[in-house]
Length: 430
Ligand SMILES: Cc1cc2nc3c(=O)[nH]c(=O)nc-3n(C[C@H](O)[C@H](O)[C@H](O)COP(=O)(O)OP(=O)(O)OC[C@H]3O[C@@H](n4cnc5c(N)ncnc54)[C@H](O)[C@@H]3O)c2cc1C
Image 1 (cartoon, helix red, strand yellow):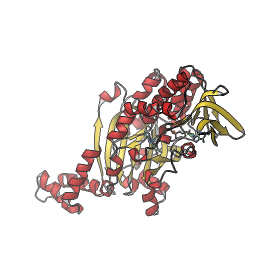
Image 2 (cartoon, helix red, strand yellow; image 1 turned 180 degrees about the horizontal axis):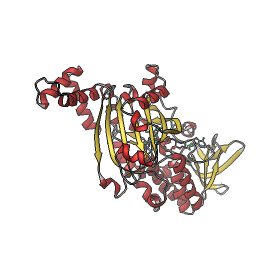
Image 3 (tube, rainbow, N blue to C red; image 1 turned 45 degrees about the vertical axis):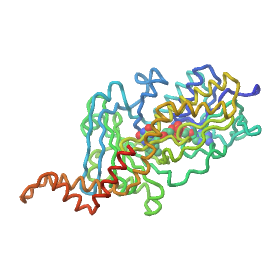
Image 4 (cartoon, rainbow, N blue to C red; image 1 turned 30 degrees about the vertical axis):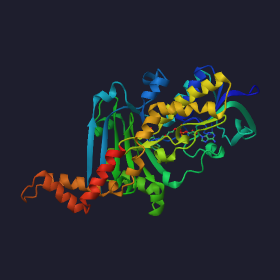
């Protein structure tokens, strides 16, 4: 097409859209990025742990210049019960060099990405919502935003978990609730010294807690608690049908978590500086659909690229990885002057070769495993009962660890067969 305004129009200024726009502008392409928020990041929300190696491939200055908060070297997998808190606490300095994961606050981080884009030559259009797609036959040829019609050879839908653009393109219907969760997050400033003391970290190192059980009042989902430079990002993610079924108000579940006697001391005396809710896609491989139409590719959350394994919640790194794959495919399409579906399908082949495709396949069974209701109650209580049996010296004769554990299993009411089944599912899913 000769009468285009831009080579590429990217819809959405989150990690996916900004990374894709940056990579294409680096290749001297004319790129427009349209973001409905007043500035990139203003509408975005993540728990905040970014597995950042992919960002070093995209932005060579990432570690030196990006406004991240702390380098995560302590990971805690935690079971929270009403009266107890069992932690598997893993600290490893190897996670700092090379940097494996950092915490970010999207309100600071996305504007930095936008700045990199502008410096690379991307035209940014914040404060505009894309209302629909322009088409010639079945070829997507641009976007409509208010009164404006803007044309491009390729449109990239990076418009997040609800992706009205892929719905309009007929790629998928509205995501069913069973694949969705709601996240509620607070950022609480406690000061740099308290972050270090309370989370047992030094320098710019940080801690990330993934917490199941009473964090969500036993609902499928989990709590998270991540350290920033002088604040804590804390919140919950809860499955939408479970919330509806139990008539829970998601913000009350969040408050219940923050007030838990094992959690509240981490936050004591702190000041609330950010608060927000956001949908999160949880279906994993189940949510995968076509990602290409003639003239259109879909990336990031819009493409369903999120992974929750219980240990880690990932979406930002997959957003960046899918942006890389899309940018490579779009570059080839622009070189060939061919924007057909067949040509753009090379995006799919490209991402399947990367960590994005590999990890989505590896953890395809994770959502099913995380549906086990015992994960959010009985398992954590059983673990606490084992430790209670070990540490509670109540003057009755001591038992060896195996009979103590057996007592805990019997006390939980769980059948040994069910426990073995969960262990088997865990091994297969994770
Ligand atoms: C509570 C919670 C905790 C999470 N924790 C983590 C975590 O710790 N680590 C992690 O890696 N991931 C986490 N995630 C997932 C992560 O936030 C997402 O995977 C990631 O933000 C996806 O990036 P994206 O660019 O695809 O989408 P988004 O960041 O959602 O960006 C989409 C952008 O498109 C814009 N937009 C939408 N529609 C239009 C339109 N019509 N016109 C113009 N602009 C539009 C939006 O304003 C937005 O800026 C979490 C998510 C939630 C909700």
